[in-house]
Length: 114
Ligand code: SF4
Ligand code: SF4
Image (cartoon, rainbow, N blue to C red; front, side):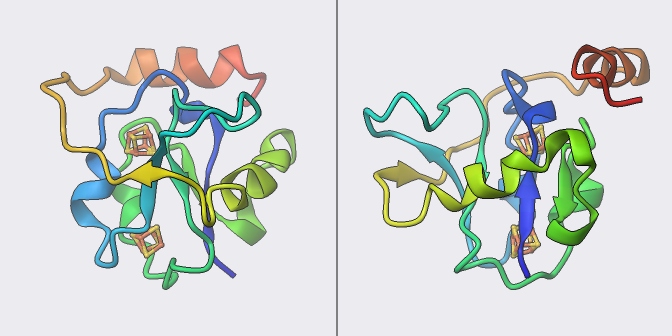
C-alpha cells in the first residue's frame, strides 16, 4: 500500500520524518529530471513497510497512507513513486525550527486543503 508525502512538504523539509523511518525509505531526489521535485521529500513505495511512524512525526501534517491522501493531493502518490530507482539520498537533519500551528494552517490553506 505505502505512504505518500504530499506537497504540504514543499520547501519545508525539516527532515523529522527521516529520523523515525525504520527502513530509510524517505528520500531527497538528487537527479536532473525537472519533473521530480527536489524541494520536498518522497517515499519509495517499494521500500515502505507501512509502519505509520512518519505520520505523527511530520510537523506539517504532510504524510498520508495512500488510501487516505486527500483528493487535492492525489497526484502526489504517483509523484512519490517516481523516486524508485532514481539518484537520491536520505537527507541529514538541518537546524530548522518547528513550525507554529498558524504556519501549518497557512501552508494547508496555500494548497487549498482546509
Ligand atoms: S517531516 Fe513532513 S514536512 Fe518534514 S520533511 Fe518529512 S514530510 Fe516533509
Ligand atoms: S510508513 Fe514507515 S516505512 Fe513507510 S515511510 Fe513512513 S516511517 Fe518509513
